[in-house]
Image (cartoon, rainbow, N blue to C red; front, side, top):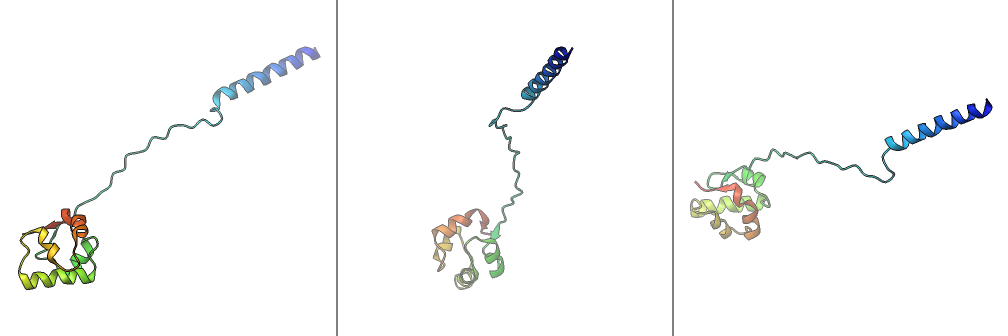
Length: 109
């Protein structure tokens, strides 16, 4: 009877270990990670450089600080309204990099 009892316990342990081994993921196995799509609420703000004040230019245009915003307004007041976006290159301190960085934000009207 003792042998039957020990055999039963051994069998029960083996079945339990076997089911745990099948249910647990393999060691080192990595489950695939599915990235959720990221939706950014990005709105392109357009700035009319013929009407924008210094604060707006400084706030909305990348790379334009107080000095460059003041230079844009001073150029506009001295030479009249801008006729093209590329005319910003004539403003002291505004180079090709700053213009291209902001081209999609700038409008002329």
